[in-house]
Image (cartoon, rainbow, N blue to C red; front, side, top):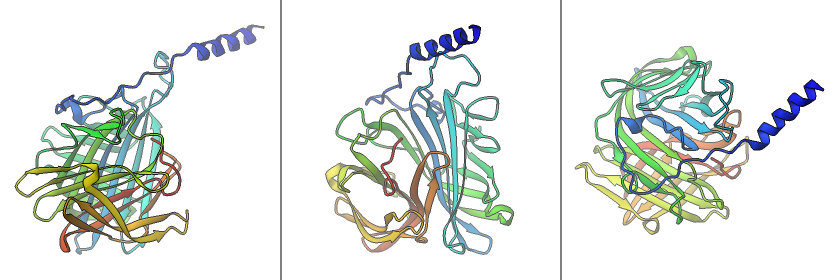
Length: 354
C-alpha cells in the first residue's frame, strides 16, 4: 500500500509538471559580446560550429568540422534533482580526407551536469567529457577532442570582426517572424595546431569559419531541411548563403550575406538567392541523393560549388538522430576560383527536426 501511494504521488507530480516556456527570437535585440559568445539556456536549441580547411606538413588538404549542440529539454524546469536532464550537450566531429574517400566522424552526447558536460553562459565554454571548445582571455578559440577516429587540438585566432547575420543578428528562416534565430559568424579564422586520424595526427595550419546560432522555433512545420554554405574567400571576403527547402524540394526561404575584401556587407533577400544543383551523389548507405555540386546565385553573381570528395555524409543517429551531408568544398565566383568553405545539406534522408 505504501509503495502504491508513492507511485501515485510520483505520477501525480508528472501530470502537474508544467512544460517549459522557451524564449522567443524577436527582432531588434542587439547582440552583445562577450555575453553572446556563451550559452543561452532559455532557448530550445543552440550550436557552436567550426569548419575549415587544413594543410598537413606534407601539404595534404584536410577538411574538418566540430559542432557542439546545446538542447533544452521539455523536462519540468522545477525539478531540483541533479539527475534531471534539463539541458543536453551533443558533440559532432568529422575529418574529410581524400586519401580515405569518405567522411571520418565521431559523436558524443550527455546531459549537462556533474562537471562532465556543460555549456556555460557569459562567454564560450562548452565541454563534453574530454571534448571542449573555449574562448580564451586573448580572444582566441581552443578546440580539443580525441576519439578512436579523430584527434584535434586547434587554436583559432580571429582576424576580422564578427559578421552579424540577418538584421542585427536576427536571422529570419521563414515568412513568419517567429521562425528565426540569433546568428553571427566569424570568418577567416587563422588555424594552427594538431589534427588527423587517431594516433596519426600531426601539425597543421589553415583557415576556419565559426558559426553560433540559437533559437526556439527556427523551422516552420512544412520545412524538409536546408542547404547552407559558409566560405572564406581568397581575397579576405566571406560568403554565407542558405535556403530552407519544402517537402517537395522547392524553396521556402533563402538569404545570403557577402562581405567584400573592403569589409562592406551586402545582404540578399529570398528572391535574390537561388540554389541550382549540378551534380548529385547517391549515398550507398542511406540512398539519399545529395546535390554535392551546385550553383548559387546571389543577385547577378554566380558561385560554383564543388566538393573536396563526394562521400561526406555524416550519420549522427546515435546522438541527434539526423543524417546529413557536411563537406569541404571549393568556391568559384563567376567562373574564377575564389575560395574554400563548407557545404551543409540536411533533410535528404528524412525531414529535419531541431
